[in-house]
Image (cartoon, rainbow, N blue to C red; front, side):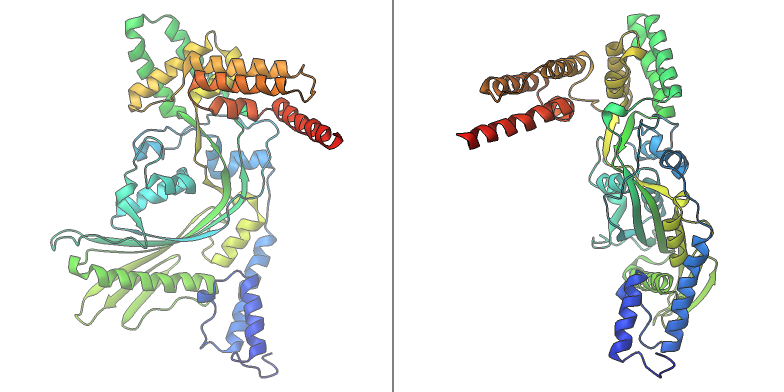
Length: 477
């Protein structure tokens, strides 16, 4: 096109540019500026396409199980200490569970996202970033309205770009603003079925030691012992397993911050910070570098930059710009090369979402570790007591022997169903409905019916075969 003296305003050139933009996954607002000549656009496209080729030649991939141990230092297998304190929730723990048998990764259940957040303190920005990196996207979003037992400190500390800043601070108070944009890229997902959850050998050994101590501790001293040893267990391994859905991939972050300005300058600084961040993000996407507004001087080194802006009142405000990455190839600040490396080598992936479904350790013990304890019901209820005493949170609406008894009854009933011959008789369905009602009366909820009965293939096959028989009978007559 350039050799034929074509120009960018021509329709054929515009169509070809649009094809290139879509293939390279560049947002329309970040495509080459209209004032750029065609020669420069074509040279830039070649430069952008050369980066992925270099990355592909260095790609390396791990098998699914090895990847789970590798990504974010095995974060997916570590426990979460679910309390009402965000600082405790985001702490990394030791490995709580083993990789389930037959584990496989699947495609992502989420799509890529481009989000923007605004923070009024460095502490709030740091808290949000730590929550994203250690708990993941789902809990970070849920935490804003209160997740599980904790109404996270982040609930008032960070806000989306659409929310108001609120009352201006006093003239003498220290001021801070940080605007963050991030590209969230999930590439694979997995889910841990409850029936396949097994505690790690280290976690199991610690619990066995607690059980041994329980048998030799007088009743009046048991609660204090449980708080001490149970607290040690929760701090080391966590209290809950993240069941998922977990997502692996990467997050590319752009951040712009400014501090020390006067409170009455807040609106102007927010606008200027947002504009410069948009320029910075645009440069990362298009590969044309970054530009600054008139009257703003800039300096850049590596993945950091700063701007010194001056308004009509001779107000000087420094804006710091940063690029950080969660996952992806290290030492790469070009978005195109980083994203290419992320997609071609799963060894660069991080855990970016741990889901919002958490299973407490005491339920894992009751479901899958009955043979490992002398009295599994006592062990489960003891952990529950310790957890509630330490966190002041309710462990579960149904715990201990009552839960175990309901699960036992459900499993026995399913064993009996294996002997049923599917006849289509109403009597079998009435028996099934009566048992469902009995479970509900005992547990006061439908969890056992859903998680134990409806998820079992015996019941699923019975219902499917009963439907087939009934349909055949209706057709016949």
